[in-house]
Image (cartoon, rainbow, N blue to C red; front, side, top):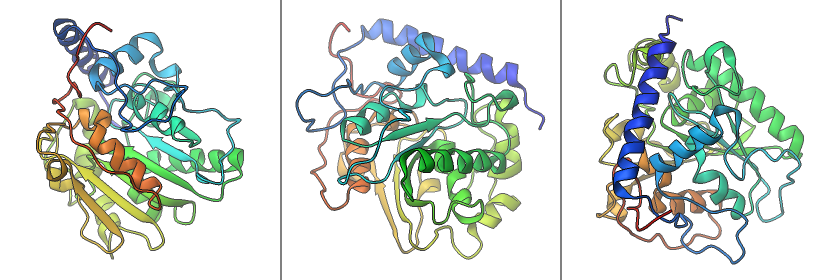
Length: 316
């Protein structure tokens, strides 16, 4: 794998630094819940400003920490939510900064929630940067993590929520990497199951983009041969028209057993992009409804900005 890790780290730090300046200019804001109707006495605050909260997570805990509400290995699923949720991050992210919204959101909703870092330098599970290298290797790491979650919780199956690359690699895992039978639901946010059209993101992720992500790659051909989906798994695809990294159609699947959502079809004033879809209240409600389809709740509509998320409203 010819990965320019120093270049990838420099780019990521540059993005975080620029976003920190922007957060300072905007003045920050009180973290409002992404869950539209939280019950009283929530144990975790649920932030909805993606970059601001990702920056804070990177500065305070980095990759060694876990997002609030995740990786409690004593958690036992309830009768209401019998399946643990596994969160799978995207390129250059980790288990902490990618899931500052969904860790607390899902834990507050009563789920046992787990998140891993995969694809880091040397396979470091506590690394600051993940999502690099071979997606096949990432799928193997995900399989081992899913088995660990199932063993710890005594749950026969888990649900997966993935973002970006984490909404791409797991589909191959489900079809060809041992995940069939271990996963009941796959929920993808801004994924690229149709493949990457061009070299994107960084030199450090070139092995993904050029080697496995292009539609002509063996990886993508294996994923698409005979259909992307696996019978018995419920798939939910959530994308945004304002995705600046991928064509939003790259995350849609036209197959039986798949529910596709375009955020702006539900909320025209939602300008979530590839980043802020991960802290978007509309997307959050869709995820909760997909995890618990027997008890769907109304999907609201609020202004969401690219990169930032819900606009800051005051001092934090």
